[in-house]
Structure formats: structure tokens, C-alpha cells
Amino acid sequence: MTRALDIPDQTGTLAVVTGATDGIGLVIATRLAAAGADLILPARSAEKGERAVARIREAAPDARVSVTTLDLSSLASVRGIVAHLSSDGRPIGILINNAGVMRPPQRTETTDGFELQWGTNHLGHVALTLGLLPLLRAGRARVTHQTSIAARSGSIPWDDIDGERDYDAMRAYSASKIAVGLFARELDARSRAGNWGISSNLSHPGVSPTNLLAAQPGMGRARVTPERRIIGALSRIGVTGTPQSAALPALRAATATDAAGDEFYGPKRVVAGPPTRVDLWEPLRSMDDARRVWEISEAQISVGARE
Image 1: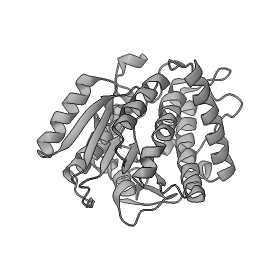
Image 2: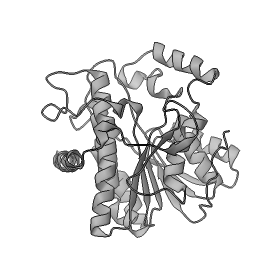
Image 3: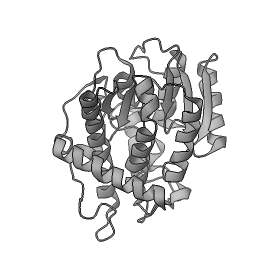
Image 4: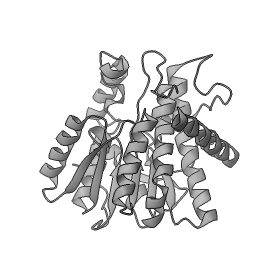
């Protein structure tokens, strides 16, 4: 496993990492466990969650890690994990919003009726983060939001966010990841203004062979995409990253003593390389857009909570 980043001691810190049953998220969780963090792995599949725990304990035998149920495409499921963690009452020191879905073969909706990528990548994490806000404030947490190089360009279709009139899967994915970054920035701005004690920043993993473009029968993709095969080949010769290297920007954003709120971390060469602080991409720069995303998202998850 790549050790290009030293993780400060995390003993006593409760860390929650979404999308940690495989790929980049599993690397993030393993590194945090090895540094002493107490880990919670929200997982849609209990079986995958337990396999991830076993793999983490192979690498870090003393790991303190538990699995709990979460399906980010269901606001009811998000409310369930929020209620579970809130009943425990333990302050959260690290939240890494890493999970995501990418390019379903056809337009698909969440259980609450939102376009799948918007509802899962963005709204599910908004509901999780805002629901856990009291525990994050109590832990003076570092919240790191994983965006994507798909957010380097594009925009949010404000008048057709759910793609009901003009749907393109890649544009929708890009919009969801732009929203992730803008929400991260607005969370940090509100924390500073309200003295919440939360530091919110963002990261991107570059390009690496993960399951985002692998076969996903649950959302209608029966086979690995050609792009996933190409990325795998490029990774093997060092052009793109590996899951181990791609995990490092989020780990730096979430744990480095010199990382701060409203900062952006990614690989030095955009697609791969050592983790470094990078400039915000154009679609992520407008704080007016960040406030708009926050307000729209709050309204959407409120509607979802009533249905």
C-alpha cells in the first residue's frame, strides 16, 4: 500500500467514511484505522461491509471498526443512520463523504424521485452531513467532500436539476460533483460565520481504476465499461493513479495538520501524483452558486423527508 502520506495519530477520533467497502474508500478507511481512529463504515450491503472490515483488520489488526446500514439513494435510510449515531451521542471528528455512483445506462431515480446521481452523490451526503451537524460540531470535525475531475467543467442545470427534460448521464454526473464541491464551500462559510467549529474542505482523487465504471447490475450496467478497462491499463503503466494513490488527497484534506477549511486537494498532475493543495476549478468558485446549492438542497431533502 502506498505510504506517500503520513497520517497523524487519530487515537480517540471517531471517523465516518462513506463508500468504504471497496476501492478508494476502503483505502481511506484502512489508513485511518491504522492511524488509530475508531471507524464507522456505512454500507448498503451488510455482506460487503463485513468483508471490508475483514480486509481492514488484515492490514490493521487492532482496528476498531463497525458497520452500519446506509443507502445514500434513500433519504429514509440516511435518517436511519443519523438517528442511530445520534442515539450513541459520540462526537464525530472526521466525516469523509466519498461514496458515489456514475453514469447509469439510463436515467434512473432514487427512492425519493431524484435523478440517481444528484440524489446519491450530492443530496444523500447533504442529508447525512446536516443530520449529523450536532455531532460534527461537538467533535469540531473535519468534513471532507470527495468531488471529481468531472467538476472541472460543466454547470448545474438550475431549471432542470433532475434531468427530466434533457438528460445526459455524464452531464448529470458532472453537475452532482459540482454541487458536492459548492456544498463543501458553503458549509465551511456557514461554520465560520456561526462559529460551529467545523472545518469543511474538498478533494478529488484524479483518475484510477475503481468500481465507478465497473459492472453495476443494481443500476442496470451488466458489464465493465470500455473506459474502465483503459483506465486499468493506464494505471498499470503509471499514467493514471491507483486506488492507493487516489485515496491520498482526501486523507490529506481530512487529517493533515496544515489542511484547512475551504481548501481543495488533489493529485499534483490532476490525474495522478502526490496529494497537494490545488486551485478551485471554475465551476466551484462562485459563492453565490454555493449558497444556491445549499438552499435548493435543503428544500429538496425537506420534501423528501415528508414523502
